[in-house]
Amino acid sequence: MSGNYINLTRYKRWETSEVEIGDLTIGGKAPIRIQSMTNTDTNDTETSVAQAIRIIEAGGELVRLTAQGTREAENLGTIKSALIARGYKTPVVADIHFNPRAALVAAEKVDKVRINPGNFVDPAKQFKSIDYTEQEYTEELANIRYKFLPFLALCQKNGTAIRIGVNHGSLSDRIMSRYGDTPEGMVESCMEYLRIANEVGFNNIVLSIKASNTRIMVHTVRLLVKTMEQEGMNYPLHLGVTEAGDAEDGRIKSAVGIGALLVDGIGDTIRVSLSEDPELEIPVAKTLVDYVTERAGHTTVEEFITSLYHPFIYSKIISDPVKQVGGENVPVVVGSVEQKGDFRPDLIFKESRLYSDNEEISFVELKDDFDKSDLVSLNEKTVLVLSTGNKNIHAALRSLRFRLLENGIKNPVVFKLSYAERDKETFMLKAATDAGILFLDGLGDGLWLEDENQSPETLVQTAFSILQASRDRMTKPDYISCPGCGRTLFDLQKTIARIKARTSHLKGLKIGIMGCIVNGPGEMADADYGYVGAGRGRISLYKGKTCIEKNIPEDDAVEKLISLIKENGDWVEELN
Image (cartoon, one colour):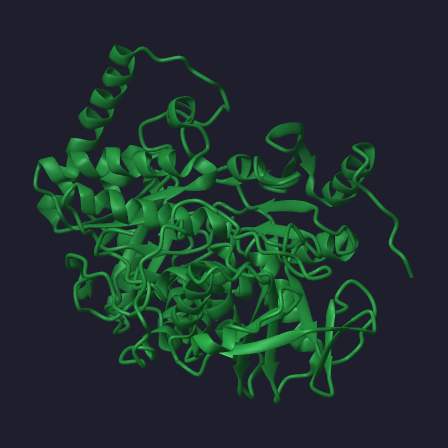
């Protein structure tokens, strides 16, 4: 693959331009910055300040707050002043959707303003296909320029930075009509605004492209970086998986998506979006950043050039199957103990042998320093187990995988990753970071995790969760739940717990639980069912991207969601 923004065998950050946000530098040679966002009412100064302080004291280097109107944008100045008065100079960021007037107010109050190209000028998403002529489309772009330039001028005057933040769930109908729901459309949504800013010499810009689907997120961010490089730009990148969820699944999904980009040197600041108290996001983000940056100076990985690597689309390498391993089969999970239920390992390793349903499977373990002579007598009915001692784990295994393919070896491949972590969360985050990128790029037929400090059940369940987060194998429901913000008018955490308690047995069903309409309806297009905040104590329910019922009292909404799932034939009774 051409370009300097990614090196397949060496850890090196893609060097971006520097952006000043208050006293903080993002990009260039600055460390990868960690941030979070409050979920308080921005008009509630004391509560917002208190939560911002908790984020800062946990290690957050930027704090973002929503500003859905000019009143909230005005109060951001009060919040910032209160933080400074208490000795906190951490940059304050405004989050703007649908309201350019609020962005203009915020530009004079805070250090950075995040705008969403999907709704800054374009009207609210209606899921309508519009057939534009070239002249009409050009006029739409001129309208964006007309409304965006005054905002840029104000930010320039006040030294305010901007984040152009695209979300998969909030692409405008205009972009969708021309590009469809594609990485190309997401990138163009960002580039339209970036080109305008670049033309007038405004460079204090950070970019982000986020999605709840990690595969879409990773491939699209790579495409954005390539597009910038082709146009002579290198703006800093903010990374995050939107609506990642909560608990272990939320952490693993975030590590898969964010980690896949960080390990290839992409990313200057990150936010782990969990449906929990925002200060709990910070330790997760710190673990990811520390783990990835540790691989600087790793043992050299043999370089390779291959046409088989597809960084912008998912392309599964199809191996020759051995029993249920490889070919068109879903990736398998290897464990060391027989278990029952949905998380039963597909293959069991015991007494130095590998078994499938008590039938032995031939396997050979290859490390990245293997000799080609090891391949001479390789039987086509042998599973290859690939492992490495290199701390740049994914690069070493990726190189090994492609070297085998270049030698005509099409045996199925199981990646074996070994750790020694006493802390369960740290183990999960590291395993997801290393394994996620391998499966997002379609390189593996199976996953085998080892850590003598973790239970066999934890190892197997983590492997299944990584495969699900990588969109390779669904073994439980996929909850697309946002972290909440000042727009959320119901108790998000309690609602998620209630919905999970009723639906955790619905294997493979995608359920969106969204605080408001900003990303809700858009993300519902990727979910089977959606539970979206419509107002204080009011919920709207979706089937796909279609709103089925609006403004349901919150007390009735979960039961109505269950009824909707049943009415559409997607409900199964839970087995005892």
